[in-house]
Amino acid sequence: MSAGTGDRGELFVDGTDRRRRTDRVTEDGTRHAVAVGADRRPAGGGAAPMFSDGGPTPSPCPAPSSSPSAASGTPSPGTGPTRLPQARSAAPRGASSRREKKPWGKIAQRIVPYDLRPDVLRLELIDLGDAFRAYQRRPEPDLAVLAELHDRKARAFAVWATVTGDASLREEAERAEAAARTTREMNANRLGVAVDGSGPVVQRLLTRTQAAQARGVLDHVRVHAPLPGAEARLAVLMLTLRAARAGTGNVTGQDLNGWLPGDAERVLEQLVDVGWLRLPETVTVAEALASRPEEPTQVTVPSLLALGPRPFSFGKVTRARLSGWAQKAVGDRKLRKRKSAAATRLLAVYTAAHSRPDGRLASASDDGLDLDAAASFCALRPEDVTGHAGSLVTADWLAEGDTAGGRLRGRLAERVLPLSGLL
Figure 1 (cartoon, rainbow, N blue to C red):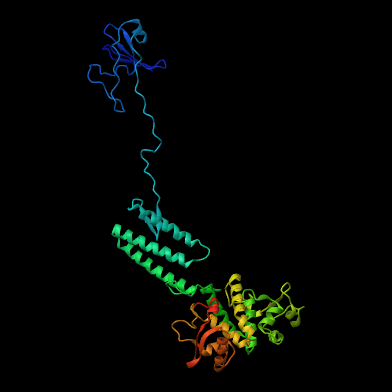
Figure 2: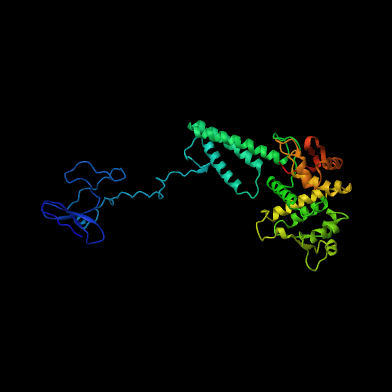
């Protein structure tokens, strides 16, 4: 690259070699080489220019002469090389423009602003949102933990409302307070303790949902039992729970004889004769009563087979829970010791299923259980329920009970509270 000069002494730029130099042509026609940047002064004099970094230029070198050293471009003795301005070191990409990232979060469908102050409130809201989402992923609910989360939310949203003056945040805080109270009441009912935490902590066999499903099974048995009599009703209940999910279930001789000591063979034959129960073709009633746990008998209840609408929709875990719950009631140690009748055992199951967490019979809005409904399930006359309720009091199943005014009132004994139906 080259640029010519006129006859007025303008600059000439020669780019033929790898170095860039500027030549100055004097009035006598002699061309003098000057390194780029050696003299940045304007041709007519004046102040030195500024570099892009804002610093002044270095002091210029002495004016060039017509000596050979000047003509060849070699610095004259006593002068050092001309110093060029150094390029600024590059900052890391985006370091100067990137804003420091702050954690952000979301709670109750609200974005937590990154600039919310005080900072401790912002971090609490972010942590709370994460905690609620983690709770939703839990395999089993924990109402005590949930109540504490609602308490924290109520406090945090109240502060947020004060800081921002947002009335909707105040309303959200009030809803969280109400949710905390309701959750604690539910947890207290489930455990059978007072809301303030006083009283015994009871390990329940059933959840509230499972207890409702148990009452559904009891109603089904009351309506669809094929034979009259408490003994047949008890066998139908226990066999229904064994076959509730698929229409088939396993039983042993110990099961059958434990439910109906001394009467199991007769009842089993009656259920087979009316077609409510089917045994395998190669198994007789006597063989079923002799079957051992390692080789149980598989029985079939045709009305529960998956050929039409299913009366029950629970899974195998719930089925096992309900069957175990009924087995504990029917096989209660004190009831067995007193050789309680089948009707008394049925009444024990019925009272457990229809009790509150504190053991009181019937829901809080009802004055006891309907005597006719209880008698119908137990295959008894209403007037006969009184005697069997007295037997349950004697066996320490009921702490108290009476049947005045057509209602069965009472309370489960403390030892029976784990079987409560959590009304």
